[in-house]
Image (cartoon, rainbow, N blue to C red):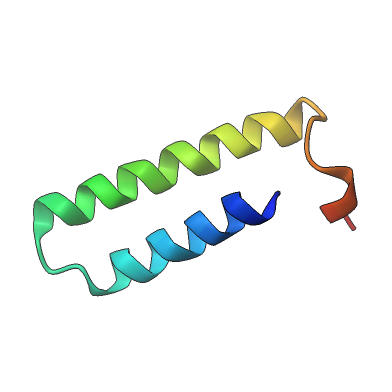
Length: 54
């Protein structure tokens, strides 16, 4: 997981936590799901950043 990815995930989580508009909330959740799914595929395929793996 790179820093830009991690920063965006944290930003989306913060926005989701306080969002009052239902439509905007679901759009933010969809974006978060897309990011996490894409990252999961990278990890599964062995393409994750090696420097960030423990």
